[in-house]
Every structure is written in C-alpha cells, then in structure tokens.
Length: 331
Image 1 (cartoon, rainbow, N blue to C red):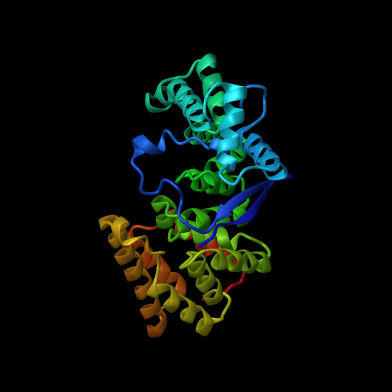
Image 2 (cartoon, rainbow, N blue to C red):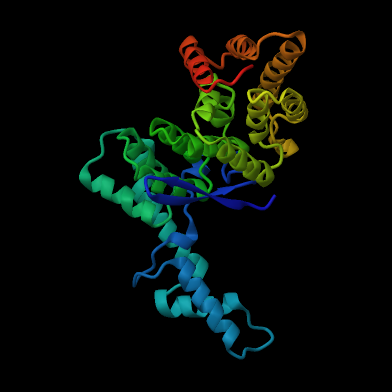
C-alpha cells in the first residue's frame, strides 16, 4: 500500500506524518538499522542538501540535448567528479561512513554525553542519521520538551520503528489525546509491537473518551482506516459505536476486526511473536463479544477481559469508569 501523509498539530506547530505501509527497518537487524541515513538529507560541501543537488542535476540533464547512450546517472557522476572528486555513489558512501563513525559509538554505548558529543549527534541528525534523530527526540521527550516532536516525526518519516509511539506517549502526557491516538494507531499499523499491544490497554481507550468532539475522533479513525489495510483504527471505531449506544454497528465492526486483528506481514516475516499477539487479541475481542451477547455490562466485560490479557491496571479502570460516567455514555 502506498504511504499517505497526515498532520499532527500541537501548540501551534504542525508535523507531517507518513502512514500506511510497513516501517522501513521493522525486520532489520539492529546492527543494520542503526546505520540508516536518509540520503536526501545529507548536507553537501557548500551547504546544498543531496535531495536538492540531485533534483537540480536531473532537471539540467532533461533540459539539454544528449546522446542516446547517455543517462541522468552518468550526468550526475560527471558533475559529482567535478564538484566532489568522486563518482556519486562512492562520494555518498564516504559521507555516510564518516557520519556513522562519528555518532554510532555514541548511540550504542550508554553514558552521559559531553557537549561535544551532543553536538556530534545533532550534526549527524541534521545530516539524515535516523538513529540520532530518534535519540535527540527521546532525550527531549524525557524533558517534556515539545521540540521532541520535530525530531521524532523526522525519524518516523524515515522509517524508525519506535518514533511515532514515542510521539503518542508525549502527546498523551500533554493532553493532546486526539493526536496521541492518531500516532499510536499509525505506529501500530506500521508494525511497532509496543504500540500495537498498547492499543488494547484500557488507558488508551480512556484517552479516546477524553476527546471532547466525537466528530473529530470519527474523522480521524476514518482517515487512518482508509490509509492502512487491517488498521487498528477499526478496534476504536467499534468501541466508539458500542459506547455510543450503537450496539449493532459496534459488534459488526469488531467482528470484522476479529477476522484480521493485525495487518499480516510477508510470510517470511511471520514469527512466534506475531502469532502470540493475534491469539491474545483475538481471545480478548471474542470474550468481549461473548459478554455482550450474554448481557454482561460492557465496562465490566472490558475490565475483566483486559485484566485477563494483562492489558490494564485497577487505576486505569477506575479512571475509565469516571470518564465514561462524566460523559453520560451508557454501556
């Protein structure tokens, strides 16, 4: 599925977030993922970034007459040798090696970073190093600094597995429940296991009902449902229907969700963890549907079933009951 873009808004700032498709290094070795650099973000000597330089040379090539055997890549190599002394691929490889030599050791060896080391990570992040972007983002999130959203959104859009989940946690702490829910669904749909298993915690459901305008929730869930096959948005859509006294619609949505509770990865990437998640979530949803049929109060059902699955705490449940009571939504 082709990736689409949505927008996160927080304290007057907006952040574009990609959605749909799998996160880039979902099934990569950690040793490979930590070396990931977004090529187009690299700053070239002279200040121009790679993406702009390549686009410029491509436009130049198209505007000039050339022989049938020539190509845009040959043209790029010619100017790369002139401007940087190497063919393009070799030159970019040398830059990436230099960036990784400077920052990877800082990422894999936990220790308090000096000012110089922090500047090295900032330089690497500004040159497309995805792991450095994520490190800066999480460090800022730990300080409850909204600037974390800039770096975490950049890391997510360049394929980092956990960055959008970190955004969800930060936004929830800042009481931006709509965009927190948006982020956790996008993260789960992209393959982040931590985000997916957080979907079914009663505290996440609680946050959805803290959003004042139901129409905003419905619009957001529709957008995410359309962006990704077997989206976790369907779970929240079903629950929203149930707690809005639309039992038939809610049950129908949850039954459809139960048929494919998580987007299926390629066969060679299906592992024991995926199977365990499907069984756990399916048991939870089946139990809730069974309880609805037998007349068990919905709140009691979700509380019991999610505790059995290990999804929630008593404190979570007490808060959820209060929120539902305050909003006068009947089960």
